[in-house]
Amino acid sequence: MTPVDTSTRYTIDPACRDWHADGDRLRQAGPLVAVEVEGVHAWAAARFATLQTVLAHPDLSRDIRHWDPRARAGLCPRTSVAKLVLDTSMLNAEGQEHRRLRGPLVKAFSARRIGQLRPRIEAITAGLIDRLAARPPGPVDVRREFAYPLPSEVISQLMGIPPELRPRLHELNRVLARVGAGPQDTGAARTALRRMLAEVIALREREPGDDLISALMAIHADDGAAFTAIELADTVELLFIAGHVTTVSLITNAVRALLAAPGQLALVTSGVLPWSAVVEETLRWDSPMAHFPMRYAVREVEIDGVTVRRGEAVLASVAGAGRDPERYGERAGHFVLSDSAPGHLSFGHGPHFCLGATLGRLEAEVALSALFAAFPHLAAAVPPGELQPLGSILGNSARTFPVLLGPRAR
Image (tube, rainbow, N blue to C red; front, top):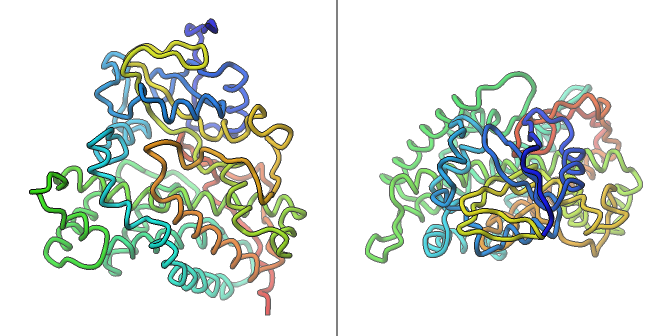
């Protein structure tokens, strides 16, 4: 068994400017590393093989009832960790409860149903390209003006959010997604967002439609699957936020990576490789997810020689696992496109694998191919070192990414 010194804990700092350097440090420290994150103690898994084990381990649960109350005593309700671990949707459910809460959404996010959305996604993308082309010359924030509105509009339509409410909801969610520079009150934005989503739920209760919220509300209580009011509210909020926040950073990070690697960009613009190769390599090399909390040991368990005691928490260090040399060899720290690249864990693994993975991949492929086709001379407007990080332990991207579009292709 590997001896582990828990007297020295690594601090996971939300203000970290380089999650990849942090991931290197964690991987070198061991398979599971004692950390402090937003006031609580946990183990961090930043090696690919260890994280894969953690994500699917039957003795590690997302149900917070398995977290030792003494260990979570320092949990602040306003932190990113708290907002995730206290959620009552399918995010933290296990077993039969997880299947009950996730089941109604599986059909809506099936590959076939998502594939049918391509024309709608392409139309929204085309409108955004036209809007970009109409802007005056000068830098434009591609995250705010392109990467954010596409997935945000798609999930709004899927959920049945009325058009008149979308501008205000998107304004609030831009704060939660950390789009734009400057200080932002995420706590107040989340409260306001939840209040507005409650209005949408009430509206759909009065006027059901062909949308996800109406479908969730239509589940009958007599089959034992009906959502409680709290579960419905948390599920709607989860769908709205998670339904596009990761994709915003995925598109942003992919544009950054391609502009810094013109040789790799040429491989897709020339048709040698598909745009899906860009999406998968970005998910691996510059994952939009930094860390994802938590899983709790339901009994004492040994993982890669480290003992995790009952009630202890494990943090998934996703960005760190994406550059693990033990998994990816010499290419680990390099952005290298391939049509047969090894897999990654950016969408999770096991029963909690991300429901929206297919949608996020499709949105990113459509967005990137359209953007670089329309603006073949696209260039970064500022050096990478000047970009401001998100400032959250969850997300790995930049708050803004100014680019120069150049002339639109004819």
